[in-house]
Length: 230
Image (cartoon, rainbow, N blue to C red; front, side, top):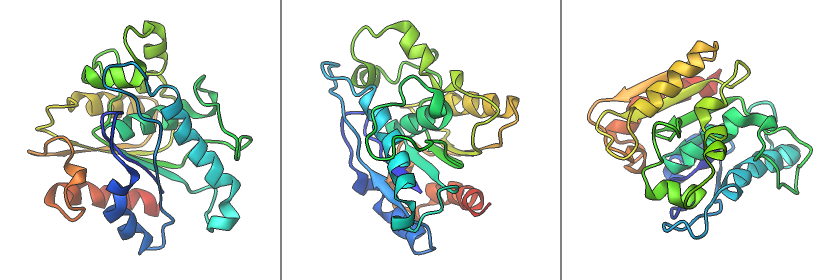
């Protein structure tokens, strides 16, 4: 299980996932929480494409060292929240063919395909949602090429070979509209990919950052545990 933190593409740290990481590690799951290149809020140093490539490289590097880490290379999952979930969406759906998937040294010849995805309130349709303004600046910089943005938009990367998804999103999210997750779930299902959307009544943006045993998180955890167990 590779976990990718949030933070608007300008902040955050892999330590945010420690409670959930310890929970899954205690159940026999190898958990790897990663950091990635952060951008600047004014767009002067965008995170793209390096932030996406960092996630790709984590998958390929872990696959290359599967024996060392006692990992089954055919059972790798991605889990992210907010900005991290946006990166997870881009990587999981872009797969090995996305134009922004290069840049790795360790494990460069390995596939970056994963077998399961958990997305907590991440961005999915860049045409309908500009990543919250400052988030878009931090990821792509000012005045990005429209074609680049659309070609990297997760909903435009969906195909029938994509991994199964669990998506958690609060109905009171004022940062990333819940329609982002509804659109992604519908697009995945339209091509025959398993996608379970858990809409959490009253949950704001960032509820995964509350205690892992919190009421909001528990509503999604059952679905993600069932996905991991398959």
